[in-house]
Length: 310
Image 1: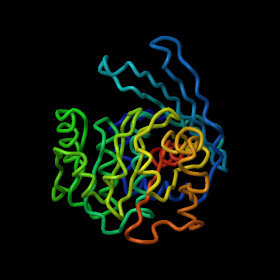
Image 2: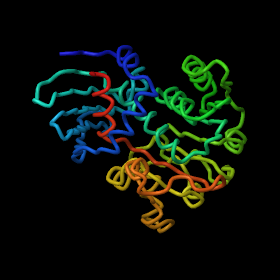
Image 3: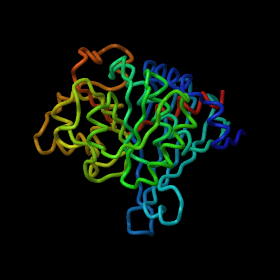
Image 4: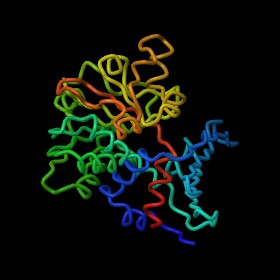
């Protein structure tokens, strides 16, 4: 059985290959049962254990096991940790993977895949809001699919934003300028792509800051009680999601406006599978604002794990 570390996984899953792998997976489909979310004793009662299985049609399986311990930040540990167990088409366990790394890489690749359909082809300025472990992967993936020449990293703490910017510089072409802006409003107002990867419970992105043609990529919140974008973002945007099943059950950025009547269900135009299978149109005009909301799906874990193991 393979036991693969973070470094080994990164070496086996180049972003370009991973994006192609995810596109093929969304086109072909697989069986994805509802994820199981259980409360874990201890802490302030907010600890969670999540099980996310996915089954390929030939019987191949990947199951991600995730712990979410909100108090881990003060311990110097990641809030979210995970492992993925991979089984062959004969039901044989073949690999155990560092699930945290796979999640970071496949989340970023899914957003980059969405960007191919939803962002402007000439997008050159990327703003990443958030300074967690996911932020560098998000920046690198978006730079892989669009001609980005400037990346702005914004966080509430300038020292963390500076560290994240340094990490991004190591992952992108050295011709790309990576900066920490003094103003989030000014950065967003000049951005073609805005990627939010935060754990915020209240909006950090305002719709009034967005310029025509912007692509908004929301990946941080995965709970009905959390928001990264305000109502103006939702109202001004055409809306797409990674999967209807996940987003319409867990995405506060969509569920909250739906519950208050700000938008109606038909405003959510399609999921990633619809885009890659060309069942719905992606970007139609250069001026439209488009929002993509991702909460993650085991389809991505299965596809990424099979690529790594292969």
